Image (cartoon, rainbow, N blue to C red; front, side, top):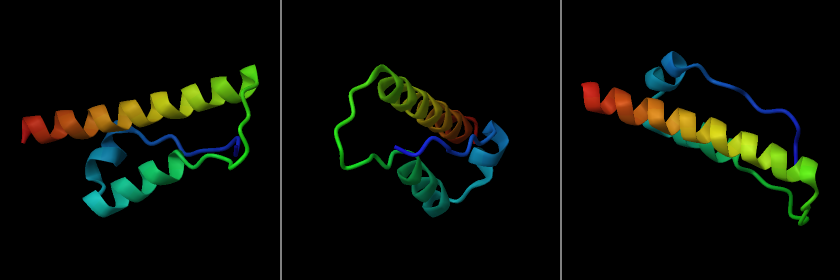
Amino acid sequence: MANRFKRWTAEEVIKMNEETFMVEVLDMIKFSPELDETDQAVALTKKKLEAIEQALEARINAAKSN
């Protein structure tokens, strides 16, 4: 798995159009074809999923407030 990924602010996530948002989310969850279950790989995957969860939450909250 790649060790680098972009962290978006809530404001940046809210301003993205739907297509851009989905491309960014899909890019964040690209996984290596190899199964790597080391503690480090699991921790990295958890960080990626937490970032995705935060981005989705920001989008949902923005949609609710509009």
